[in-house]
Length: 450
Figure (tube, rainbow, N blue to C red):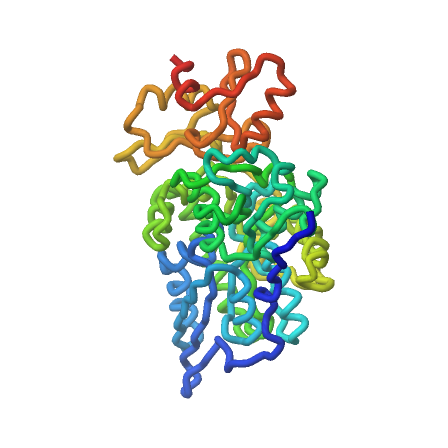
């Protein structure tokens, strides 16, 4: 079916003129330096370069130490945005020095910076998922849509140029669906798309963290397609203006030192970190923990892993096909010298590591810790024994490994095993391949653990 709602890609196209006096402003005495950081508070896989970093005050701490060394006074101006596109607009205008955004917006950041002779550089990663599970396509609860094929002729909300839109395009193409002809796609901000889904004006919504998890937690959506089924890495990262980095390398180093400390804090105090991000954003802590917890969908690690850079290069073709950018020289955009210096001799080891704790966890009411389990059966037994006191329970999809809420998952009984799936499509695929396996409800899954 030919698409009748046009792609409003112009919303993401940035101004061609570079304006402004620059974010790296110095007072008349030359001793006060203002550093402007653009971040996305509700895009919670950027928290180690944004929300949590700001909450902990680690960047300011590092800059105070730098000020003692060079005699300058540093001030940080934090600017919060809903998506990466306006951060890029401000960066190429010289008004934001450091920004954090997802992988597809990072490519637009690189392209626009080069086009306007205001180049930027990718200097670190915040959170990543090697299978692509940070992006999800959701429908309303009870929707008859069960697979991607059911989206033919349907209205789908997406943020064009975002990582989640890349997931939508890739997923549809793999399913033999033309994303430009076979669906009616509307370019919308995440909050607008979420409202449209609720009103019924959209049949599905493709979005990035934390919107799918939030809507599922609130009982306003169910997962139709798990981005983890693509097996394509996705991540969020930190980009800096090249001119700024050349003028203020010590500030970039201070930022990355603060980001590393914030990452350590998140890893050692995951529940406390989730609560802090929740307080700063208004997102439920249970949703924050789904993505950012000890076994969360995201792995937090500042290193610029080769798997992520390789995926970034593959993403260029998706953006070019959508006419959102021309060629992008990813190799010149990636600059690992600052993060390498931050790590020292330990960088190579950290670069190779992709270790991630178990995704199966239970968070009980009144507790400031979670409990980890070796698999879904053990988790279900624990939940069944603590009915009424469970704040949130998380399990890993049996095929993609994507963590999801246990009570929002689709459960399958396969012999003696109880298996969770983030979507009905993956559950149905399992039952087709395993004779005798059948879909059961969450309550039935709990009862069968007795």
